[in-house]
Length: 93
Image 1 (cartoon, one colour):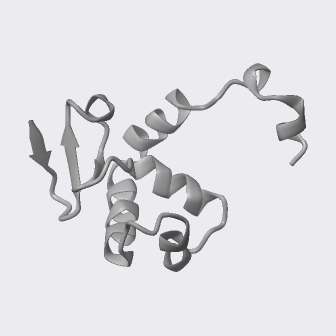
Image 2 (cartoon, rainbow, N blue to C red; image 1 turned 60 degrees about the vertical axis):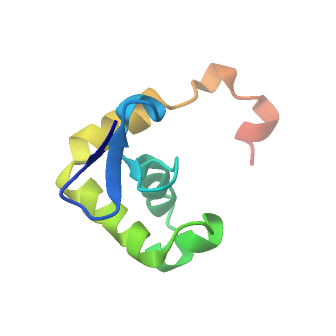
């Protein structure tokens, strides 16, 4: 069942990513947007990397993150690929 949050474009659905906050109408988690932003990509450029998203959705995801940092940081941590599983050739990039 899809549940709306206080943020217009952010919903949760237990059937998608186990209820992790996502952009409404997509399977894109808020954490994906936050991780791009943390890498130094300006919000205005994120739709270039995720062209199915609008700028309004990106800013709403970052607003959601601002209100729920501990929750989103936990999802980011949970989805980290351990260093020992990353091919050494990829690590040098």
